[in-house]
Structure formats: C-alpha cells, structure tokens
Image: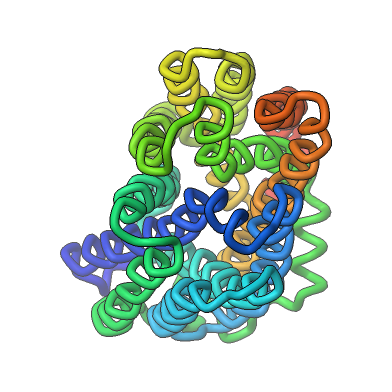
Length: 419
C-alpha cells in the first residue's frame, strides 16, 4: 500500500468508480428500452424478464468465479478489468443486431461475462491499496457509482429515444467503453503482491478451503440470506421501473427516463454514502452496529416499496421510490464490510464474486424473471396495472432480509473466522 503515491491511489479509485458506473449505464439503457424492444421483437413480459434477468445472471456467474480465481492468484487486475470492459462494451453494441429473442440472449452473454469479471477484480484492487479503516467508505462509494450508472442509464436512454431507436441507442452507449478500457489498462495502479506483503497470492487458497470458510462462517451465511432476500426485491424494482411508469402511469420513454434519474440515482447514492459514513464513523470493530444499521434501513424501506407500487399519483410514487432507495441501500455497504473483515485477503475476490453472484442470480435473475412472469399472470385480471401487483408481491422479501441482517451481526462472535 505504501509503495503507491496518494495521487495514484486516488486516480485509480476514480477510474474504477467510473467503471462501476459505466457497467450499470449499459445495463439500464437496455431496461429503459424494454417496452420498445418487446414490441419490436414480439416478446412478452415473461420473455423480457428471462432475457434481462435469468439468462444474464447465469452467464454473469459463469464468468465471475474463474476471473475471481485468476485475480486471487495474482493476475494483472488493470488488464483483467480492461478486458472485461471491452467485452461488455462490444456486447452492448451487438444487441442492436438482434432480430429475435435468441439473438438478444446471445449478445447479452458477452455483457454478462464482462460485467461479472470486472467487479471482483476492482474490489480486490481497491481493498489492497486502501487501509482497512477506509474499506466501508470505499465499498459504499463503489456501490454509489453503480447507482449513478443506473440512474444515468435511464436518463441517457430517455434522451437518446428522442432521436434514435433502441438499436442505435445501444451502439452509441456501448462503444465508448473501449476508450475507458484503454485508460484503465494504461493508468490504474497494480501493487506488487508477494509473500512478504499483505495480499500474498503466490499460494492462492484451494477452492475447498475457500468454500469451507465461506460456508462455515455463520455470519456469512446470514449475510448471504439477507442479500438474497433484498436483491429479490431491490433489483426488479429498478429494472422494471421504466416499464412500470410507462405502462401504469402513462409516461413516455423520455419522461420515464428523466423522472427516474433522481429516485434511482439520488436515492441509491444518498443511501450508499450515508451507509459508508455511518459505518466508518461509528462501526469500527462493532459488528452488531453494522448489522443493526442494515436491519433498521430494511425495515424502514419496506412500506415505501409498497407505496411506490400502489400510489396512483406518479409524483407521489416517485417520491416514495426515492425514499425506498435511500433506506434499502443502507444495508449493503455495512454487510459487505462485515463480510470482508472475516476472511483472509487471498479469498476476497472470490467473496466479492460470491456476493455479486447472490445479487445477480437472485435479483437480476430470478427476481426480474419472477416479476415479469407475475405481471404476465396478473395481466389477465388487472391489464396494464399488472406490474403494480407483481412489484408489491416481491417486496415482502425485504422483511426476511431484515431478520437475516440482524442475525448476521449476532452470529459474528460465534464465527471461527472472526476469532
């Protein structure tokens, strides 16, 4: 850590923050165009949920773990991140060539693979070049960058829809990532990792040892359940928000993209930065505080999620959506910091991939598909209001997530990894 000048550390942080934002911009632009893509390619809500969610998450996971293992063995992280950016950028643009659902799935395989590898590599690099006391804040800023990407993606997609169709919009959004990939490869710091330094990787932990630590640590199991339950509701709200405000409240693509910028970006950024500040300021060495912070945030978020879906006035719904995101987001940074503190350094990339896998599979994958399937089912009875009831139903998983977050803190003292 000391070998890297402060300015280099900060510039690397800035670059990886931009990478985190871009990955979600590319993902969310697709989401804002989902109704138009659905009409153009004749795909119903269940099919779009499968394409945007489950198929994406499967290939995200398949890429995340091999790349995480490569990182933990000492792979060149800036090069790995740059390669991942290049893959997902080209794949985003390639979606424009799709003539049917199968073509769309094939193009999004590349998007999933690239995004699945960049996250763990970036987390591993930042957690090495910053001191442990800064980890909650660093992780929360990266999560806030994801939030900026989600909101900016919707806004950018809405603006592009005024001049271009969905195909050209995806090309315009995707290809600039190649420039960022080159900059990251050329300028991001990569500290030495040898047996004499923290972060030793010359003898990467065998997978059986990694699995034993991750599965055998009680607080990590509770954290996994908490993130699973929250992701099951949180990501479907974001991915389906554009469709929700277009079909339920009658907004145009441009109106929905602009309206969602502050509820998504503002809510998630405020929530992540607030969580990072509270965790760093008061939570050092206090696992019960970290899990308590997550628990309170989730319990408070639940009624606002229901309000977002059920309120008939679009402005009131958007206000509830903003508050929902502020409160819901508070859980993730503290729980991630709690988890990373309990494992050896040469397992961090795999843990990061595991957390991303839970979020992706349960939220983007199963949750997004389930909302689409429920919406298709409810359409027979509720017509264009079907998404309202689909989102309301999945929001109840947040309550179980709050209980699991509470138990994560209580079980730390019984964890062998924390002894």
